[in-house]
Length: 128
Image 1 (cartoon, one colour):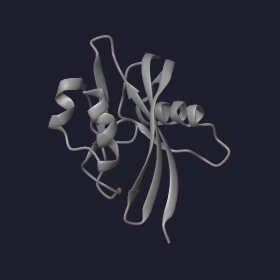
Image 2 (spheres, helix red, strand yellow):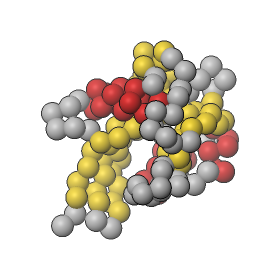
Image 3 (cartoon, helix red, strand yellow):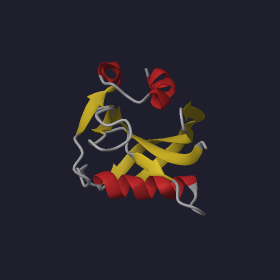
Image 4 (cartoon, helix red, strand yellow):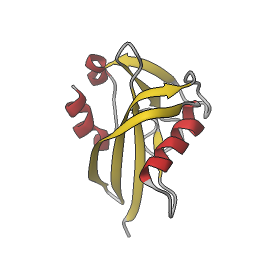
């Protein structure tokens, strides 16, 4: 049976136009790959609310300005994802690794140097 998940994701951009990425931890699906902060939308939760919650839980940031950048569906072998990417142009706080993951700021042109999950590649190409 194929599992269905809805994911809200924050593409955080700082004043230097760099994007915040984090590395998936060992033991997780797609461990070692890079991604933007985000996670599963809980039942009854709005997409924006999930993005705000995940951003706070994972890296301690509070988004103050954001817009929906893209939505897409992607299917892995046993997992069907509905992905919603928000471009965060203003935020409060400084990013901190709150879940033990490696985080870093990279320029848009550097994104292609990092290995992202296949589900993210369409959005990466739109950012480039």
